[in-house]
Amino acid sequence: CLQQRYNSHSLELKEKIQPEILELIKQQRLNRLVEGTCFRKLNSRRRQDKFWYCRLSPNHKVLHYGDLEESPQGEVPHDSLQDKLPVADIKAVVTGKDCPHMKEKGALKQNKEFVYEKSINESFYPFPVQYCVWTDGLNALLGKDMLSDLTRNDLDTLLSMEIKLRLLDLENIQIPDAPPPIPKEPSNYNFVYDCN
Image (cartoon, rainbow, N blue to C red; front, top):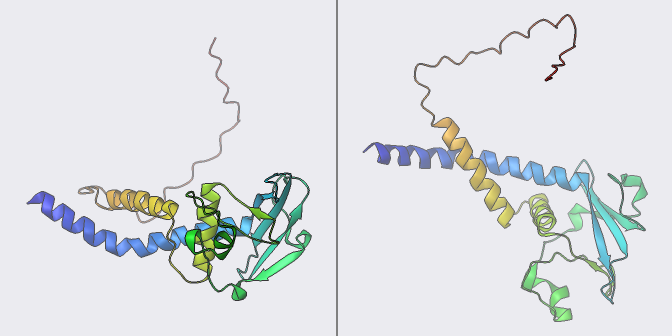
């Protein structure tokens, strides 16, 4: 009987907090797009000697991208990226078998590859996490569901932790309304301990 009540409360709580957690994941994905990502560029001979960088503007309205000669150390500023794509011009994010580029090439591979085609011979293939972050982020910008394995895993993990925290037995435990006071600063900061 106790287990049934726990399961019932757990399911009810899960339905209540899932939208909050999905919103948190969405914001994380969009923040990653704003930070930007450097991708390796493949030419027709599959050589990976150049890079291109793409990032979302802070107002989430424009994708800035451009070619780079070498992998950057840190973020690339928006004004140094030559090309722009308004988010309003993106109609859909198409991947896998549905991607026209993959149909044209007849080279559909089993692993998921996110392909941006600047010309017929140039495309990029990011790592699986980057693929998930970018497809989820672009879908979120378009108001569509984030369907990647990474989102499912993040959602499961965060839901599980949040449910466990909220269902903790907090009986007879007083949770203060205000944080505890900050202690005074120490007289000195010599906190070295000699182990010898």
